Length: 498
Image (cartoon, rainbow, N blue to C red; front, side, top):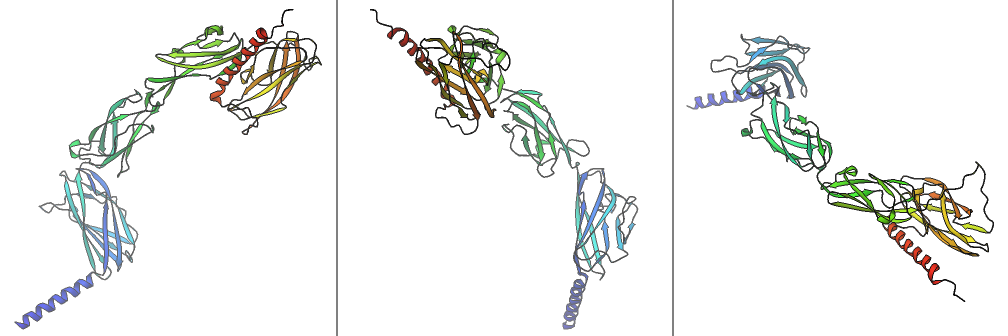
């Protein structure tokens, strides 16, 4: 009995020792692809890694077999690429085992070997199948493992997106259909991947990430809404496979208007000038669209002038309210009209003569920031013994719509002076320096002139700059003040009768 125990122990020790001798390296083997459709041929690549130990000099791959021990996969080795320093052999017909043997040093520790060119045709029956493998090192040590491949529907290859509208309205919801396809161009009814949505419209209402269910059978309907007008699209992407599909372009039209805005704002012109007004409507999502041709325009009755659709020809001096109406919306602005006076014509390079007793005082330099306005005082000094009637200030050197002068006309008594308030409005896109020439005219013609240098810079120096949103109020106040002054001159300062 004791002898039997000793023999059993000895055999066990020998077996353990043999195992330790055989396990002189560690290895892994992987196959790509590891899944494909039924009855489909795929080119298979095999990677063998020696993660430690003696050099691997032999690789054996056994093809899965059915219950009758017949190979499940049909293997074609005619296109195989054999790495330098290796040979291969096969057993069985059809092939059931492939063996690679090193003619050189083999796969060293920390190295790998890639084997290409095996074409394997999957069976007609779906399922998971196990390929067994064994690696042998230079010390006769072996290591074994299993690689599982699955057969079913073809792996995901692409998406299709249907029912995308060619046009829609901002905010309107529409439904689309996403289908997953395998590389056999059939709907992948077993698709259970996760997709995400993105869009060229940053305001679009998109579905959250969605993981397909088996019950979806590879097809799912989603709802989308664009909020930004213009040409828009969206993209569907599988987060794992990295496969994506972008929809066709949809032209998104603005939604119903919620407000309108007339332009230009608070423009200044001379009598006889034409002003083109435009109207932009805005929808609930901030999209704007031109409704000029659909709008009605009007100006205060006393302004006179005439309309040709959206173009107004100014007539009478003053500050007038202008309105635009579209559907039930209305937008207002003002139009300042000054008196137009023709400058006497003269020969080129001839400086007109003016009376020495009359002078025009204006600042030598003013500085205005682009997109803002400034004011200055221009004074007509009458040192003659007779009054100057209907004195007005004309401005040259800048566009007429840059300048508003109040009052438009004034009488300057003998041996006195009159001040005119000049408002200069500089557009936002202007820079540089311009020379402004002020010309004073009376019913006698040109009587005085003066020059001012306009420096358009980012740092205005005048103390009289008005914010744009209060300019209109200032203009109205000035106009009212001018009327009061004229009334005072005409009625309250009449000479007393003797």
